[in-house]
Length: 214
Length: 214
Image (tube, rainbow over all chains, first blue to last red; front, side, top):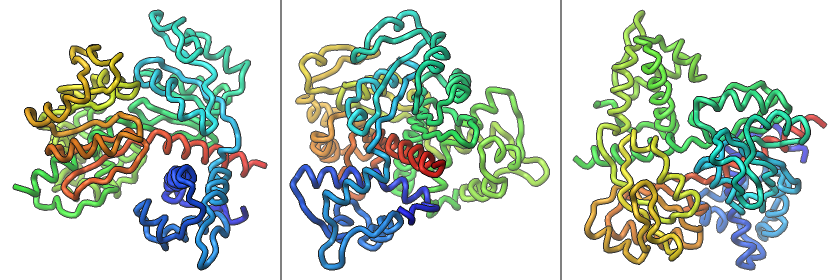
């Protein structure tokens, strides 16, 4: 995979979509597909698809198209889905519980090892066989366990503090659901899910459409 | 707001972030801020900020900067936050319940009017004073109530079907949490929250970093 240098974020953000569509094709027993057909399904142009996949290596053959299974496996490898990732959830409110309950994530190798919360009413409760632990035990847990991904689902006001504890104890992947931009050192990767921003974008587009119709 | 034409999606996607930071500044009693300071906070350049805000009108004054309250109010107006939006949730699983419980959304004018599910165990349950209704009643509800935003939290296999019912009954805003790309007519706006794709992006970036460190 020598080509895998300086891939733009735009391409990276499209890879999961390729992965999802190819998984779908596999389920429907489709053996091969042309970049044109794949493009029509996903809503990209054939040339964009060829260009994207070309960033990672030479897939597909002129006149034959892509072997769906090969391409799926390759993209899974590129995405790093051949490994297991250990995650912990901090904050067992609605979003934290939803994430803990979402079985889909284990299919891509994310295993939730522990869930922490500060609320005495939640501590001791079980979500899918994992007991919610007191957040005061977080530091100890991190010293004794290797954690790849810290999933931050605490209120915004506590998010940076929790993030700092994670980072100080060697966690380099943060999946952040708190509506705040976290400060982290360069070696730490943060992926945000900002629900409010998504909602505001939708509202803007709806409102904008209303105004254009006046 | 004559300038508000052909705004790029990139600028639109940044507006909620401006809104969030300005809200924060207001809370901290900051009266005015220069594009440089605002840029440092948000992580954009001063020139990007001036360029973005200039798409919507002439804010700010040379040498003075922006009046925080005015700018916040203007951006709220641009985003369409001066109105109320009626939303309904379809699918009262983990994500659906999380959305229903998230009080933050009502602050931006989204009021959840009803929640529907197909699961007899959930029907009749209450989330924040809203009783979960049988999904068979969805069509009737839509005929009798104006709904701005349909929030789709059903499993992927049912998402398009639910979306079609919403669209056929006049809903033009879809907030989609199902891991599927919905087909909708041109007059309908879809905003997706694809959690799996966000997770895969994070895993890719972690995996990629690991490889670079070898």
